[in-house]
Image 1 (cartoon, rainbow, N blue to C red):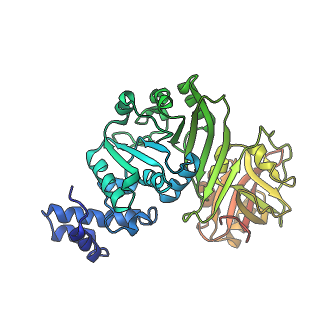
Image 2 (spheres, rainbow, N blue to C red):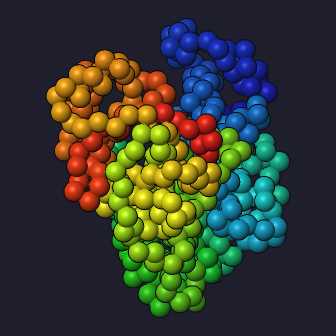
Image 3 (cartoon, rainbow, N blue to C red):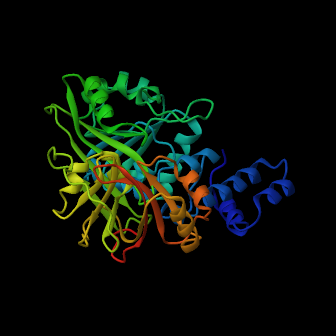
Length: 412
């Protein structure tokens, strides 16, 4: 792998807006130019996720896959907040990759050791740490982290691990025990080396089941103290578990929702075991409809969500939408004004299609899925309005609810 030297930087800069396919045809057979073209492609793929790193012209992508799999800087910042890095503390990153998490730890003053099993990835991490001015607090090792921690005499204040969630064939893995490295088999040893372990896991996992699995793996050495769903206003991105040594068996359940620039962030913590909501309201035109953010939904803490404000009521025990006649600015989700409520009769469907030829469709605890509902309504999806098919009230009556965004929605 050629270094991102001044000559390559200049070439990448001159051709940054060119068509990579044409460049490959023009410079076919030139390995150095092929690597420069890969840098152009990777910079385009990763531009929105790692803008700070890409301000550095000499930042190097070791493989094309590294751009696709890189953690965003916004997520790395959240991981760093969870880990609580402070100047001088020793930190081990067992799955370095492009190094965005490790670089954030070093930026915050931690002394970082990062491991990657791929030699070209480890070499690039050293190069990039120097390019970013972090070399005094960063070291990278080319090793199998599972083997390394089994034999090392070193110790750290914290360890971060982000197991690979794709199989050799490229399919997604969701069980933590199927990912590599296998956290379950390593956790006991990790707790011998550091008092705090931060584990990034698939958003597809059940948070309670994950906590139980990690507690069993930790044995008597420690337990999960925090389990956190992290996501944007559109999707849950990941689950992060914190395991601490020598701590009694307890865990706080949390959700963090952030926007792309992380200029705004909404935190939600489940306080105690709030009972499920006992009130289930029918939607009323003019009232406000509340949809929890995906990370908040992942916690499944419906009682805690309803307890945010006494005016909140759930539509149905299995319909995870809430209503209120009051604007609740602190609600961790989307706030909308209910514009139309209708039954599921044939005439209703025709009228809805005429009134709202273009609207986004979603279903919650409904007899049919959203694509089928949109098909029956004969509408195109898009615009600002949202149409929900949802069961409402204690009798689980199917209803159509049309809502428009409220101007004070937190993240939009």
